[in-house]
Amino acid sequence: MKRNSRSASTTAARRPTLNIDHLPLPYLEIDAQGIVTRANRAALTLHHPEQGDLIGRSGWDMLAIDEKDLSSASFLALMASGEEPPIVCRSIFDRSGRFRTYELHRSLIRKGRKKAAGVRMIGVDVTARKNALEEAQRTCQWLENAMQSVADAVILTDALGVIRSVNPAAERLSGWSANELTGMAIDEVLPVQARPRGGSVLDLQVMLELPCSGMATVMTREWRQVKVEISTSPIFDKNNGSVSGVAAILRRAESFV
Image 1 (tube, rainbow, N blue to C red):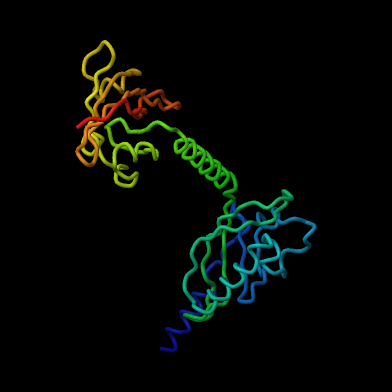
Image 2: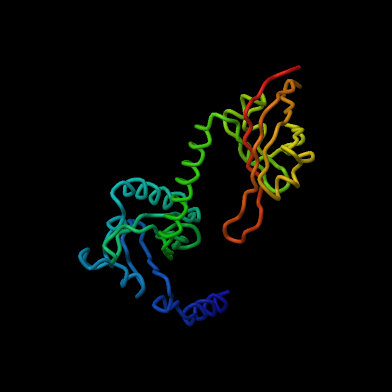
């Protein structure tokens, strides 16, 4: 047993340590008190010089003020639990002179088999991705608000006729809620019989090919027939020009049983 133990110790001593300066992404090691104990060249290059030396500083000195308390409490809880940490995003003040969003991929530094002695982490700058996502969310919210403000019923489907979005006016017209309609085939929950002006029967294939308008009969949730004026237009993908669905606007003409 002693010989095996000595052999294992010798093997561990000869095992090469990771040369962190060769890593292309910023790498940090933080002890159990949150003090930076090790950093590679990429991390040192990103560190803002006005903040002084990176080694020996608290890991929370670089964070946005509103994130410091939550991050500190989360870190201390992690040290106490000894569980492997999840990926987190933090706003870090770097050499750019601004706070940028970094995705931190972390693992525990352990003392012995279980006791947590700190955290090692690699940071990935995801500021551009975060900004693009937030802009997309703002655009979606704006479009949703615009849809809700339209007095006529608006129904958006994909190229297979599956409903993707409706506005409140469409809910009132059909008797179905938006949650019930979304994801369902329009012919299944809201059958429409339509005939364009001067043309043949208006079906999904026709709607996918060109803008159309005419009169239609909609069957509501209560199996009531509602006569409407309908205008449809193909939805084109601006990136490749393909048709991705249909936008339909329905205006009540008269109701009958």
